[in-house]
Image (tube, one colour):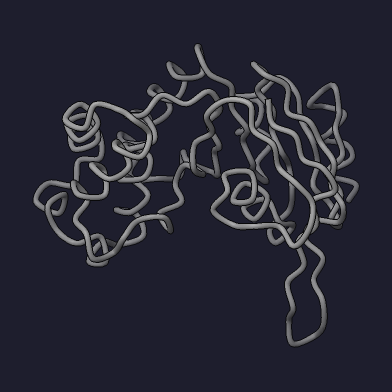
Length: 215
């Protein structure tokens, strides 16, 4: 279970304050697969980073009961001076996993070839995303955070990602953020809408769709 209590995040821009999250309180129940719809710039990725702990809110609290992944497809947590393999070894130790198993799985899954032994700073954004997704699948989490992960790589690799993710979903829960309704339908049973700093929950995806489209 993940609980958000009065979470606020504000960015200062040249035109003033941009309130991305406005005192958001929300509970993601254990075992629930929940989608979050929001238009570009609504703050979906920011919300995931705050849930993951890779970004801090300006105020409020996030409580985790269980292990939570980093946002899949988000490569900002890697050390650019280290190779893909070295980053995997570091992550495996942090999460108390078998290092060789994590490295082997990620290397096979990400399909980076010789780049797996090269510094991550030499990677393209797509390569970083492949490494992040492979590493996410190599480590078992209670909750997976997903940010448009199916856009990674070519059609064959995208199908590989979907299959691996569906297998994980059978024993873990997911939080998926997207502005594509079909992505939410593929992975989730319920939905919320992020709009003007508010996170509104709906029992059905169709109800969420109507509010999202009206907004």
